[in-house]
Image 1 (tube, rainbow over the protein chains, first blue to last red):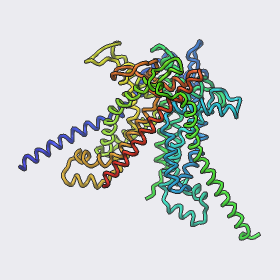
Image 2: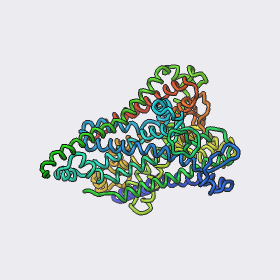
Image 3: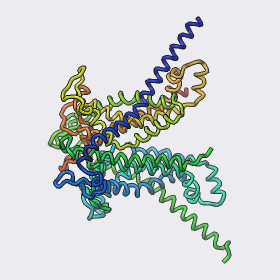
Image 4: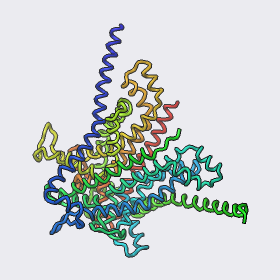
Length: 302
Length: 306
C-alpha cells in the first residue's frame, strides 16, 4: 500500500520534470525568434556591404536604388522616418499626457470607467484602417487648411500615427499616476495647492517613470509603423524638415520593394534587409532606453 | 500694499488657471474620441453604399461593382485559426514556465528582457523573418520538393502566414498571460503544495482555472492584433490576385487587411468605397469578437465566485 503510493508519487514527479522541460522549450522559442530575426537580417545584409561601402550607406544623402546611377545613402529614409515620428511625438506627448491627467486626477470614477476603454479602442484598430483614414479623411481636410501640402505628406501620416499611439501614452501614464499614493495629494492640498498645482507639481513628477516609459514606447511604435506611412506619407526619399512634403520612411521603402518584382539576390533586394537591420537597431535602442527609464526613475511607494 | 491685500487676487488667479487647465485636459481627452468618431463615420459614409450580400459572396474583380471579399474573408479565418492553434499553447506554456517554474536568476531576467524587446520589434521585421524562414525555408529545399506529404518550402501558404503571425503575437501573449498568472494569490498554491500535489498538479487544477479569465482576455487582444495585421503578410508576398478560398494549410491565400490595402491604393475613386466596405466588415468582426469575449469573461468570473 505504502509502496504503491510512493511509486505513484515518483511517477508524478517524473511527469512534472517532463512538463517543465516542455514549458522551458516554449520559453526558449523567444530566444530562437530573436536570433532568427538577427540572423536573417545579417545574412542578407553582409553581401550588400560587399557591393556598397558602409560609409556610403550610413552617410550618403541620396537614396536611389532603382534607377541608374544607383545610390544607397540611407539618410533620406532615416530622415523621413524621424520626421513622421517627431510630428507624432509633438502631438501625442501633450495630448496623451493631458488626457491621462484628466482621467486619473479630474474625472469621476464613472466617467473614467467609460472614457478609458473608449480611448483604448484606438489601440485595437488595424493600421491599414488608419492608413485609409489618413488618405480619405485627414489629408483632404489638411489640404483645405494648408493648400500648399502635397497629396502625400509627412504631416498627415504623423498626425494619424499620433492618434494611433494616444492609448499607449494615456493608459500607461494614467496607470502610473493612479498608483501615486493619495497621501501625497492630500499633503499638497493641505498646503493650500489647487487641483492643477497638485496634479502638475506633485502627482505628475511622482509618476514620471511610468509616464516617460509611455512616451518611449509610443516613439518606438511610431518608428516601426508601416501601413499608415506607406499609404499617406508618399514614396519620395528626400531629406527635408518640411512636414508638408512627401517623404519615404524606412518601412515604406521595404514595402515598396516587396510589392514590386525585384529578383531575389540582387542588390536592390538585399537593400530591404539592410534597411530592416537599421530599423531593428533603432528600435532596439528605443527598447533599451525604455528599460533604463523604468529602472532609473522608478519610485517605490508602499 | 500689504500681502493680505494681494493674496485674494492671487488666489483668484490660481483658481482661474485651475479651471482653464481642467477644460484643456478634458479637450485633450476628447481629441482621441473625436478622431475615433470621425474614423468610424468616414468609413461608414464611404462604405455602406457598397455593402451587400454580393460584396460578401464575390471574389475580387477588376470592376468595383463586382469586387467582393469572399476569398479574403475565408483566408483571414484560416489564417487566424491556425495562428491560434500554434501560438496559444506555446505562449501560455512559456508564460507558465517563466511565472511558476523559473528561478529569479540572471539567465531568466535576460530571457524576460528578450521577450519584452521582441514585443517592441516592428511587425514588418517579423515579415522579413517569415519570408526567409517559412516562405523560403532558407532556400534549403529545391522548388516543389514534397517530404512526407508536405510541400517544401512552404511558399506563400496559409501555414507560412500563420507561423509568421504566431511568432509576432507570442511576446504579447506571454506578457499578458504572465500578468494573469501573477494575479492568482500565492495562498492557493501553498494550499495545493501543502496537500502534497506536484507543481504541475497545482498549476493544472488550481492556478490555470483561477487565471483563465485574464488569460482569455490577453489571448483575444493579441489575436485581434494578428487579425488586423497587414505589413508582415505583404512582406511574404501575400498581395496577389486570389479568386478561391483555401482548402488546406498549404494553399495560397489573401486576407482582409491585404485586400483592403489593395483596394485603397488603387486610383479609381470607386475602389475607395469598396475598401471602406471591407473595413466595415473587418471592424465588425473585431468588435463582435471582443464583445463576445468580454461577456464570456464576466461569465467565467461570476462562475468562480459563486
